[in-house]
Length: 253
Ligand SMILES: [Zn+2]
Ligand SMILES: [Zn+2]
Image 1 (cartoon, helix red, strand yellow):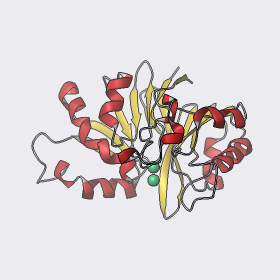
Image 2 (image 1 turned 90 degrees about the vertical axis):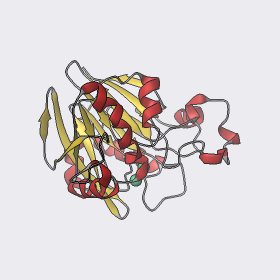
Image 3 (image 1 turned 60 degrees about the vertical axis):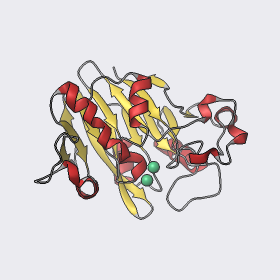
Image 4 (image 1 turned 60 degrees about the horizontal axis):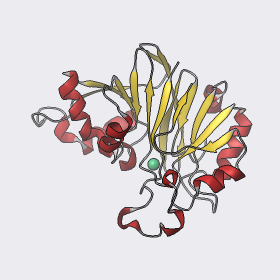
């Protein structure tokens, strides 16, 4: 059994955005306040984090993350990696490097942008992660982890299937070969930016519903929504098997 916590469910700028601009219409429902996307998966034997965005520190405190055995990174956009530096606190308490799985492309980006953490010039006391590139099914303790490559406009993203849950954020389109890997999941987490109009690098909510239907996933939760998506109104319009997630929501898979 896996306990899955949505640490964050917001689009790249968060909701509300810095400065609080344009957020009047979403006031009053805390589920409309969305930090950047991340998920915590906890089993008897493993504690895994998918993506470490800019609010990673706050998310771990408010959801009670005390141990991190593995980090999975989907892609190199800052809303998914800016919090890597805050893994330091876990290095201190766990007394060692934290394994990190990602794609080749994202690994190279991390090595460049967080250069002070790696190699000869490694800054003393900086975050210690042990990066492995994975491009096929891998086992980690009690988890079977399958990379799920797909398109996000100009770049590739690597989502992950972890046992019975598939996590796909920042999706524009999914190739057939990846759809086959997702099929059979009990739960899918899928990004849906807004109701409309179409976006060059993200699925809209109606497009995400189409994919959920096509793959016949019993339950899908949408993430990466912007500030024009009202939680309650949207969930009323959506079918029961596709609903919006919100920050700190917990599900058991
Ligand atoms: Zn993103
Ligand atoms: Zn992105």
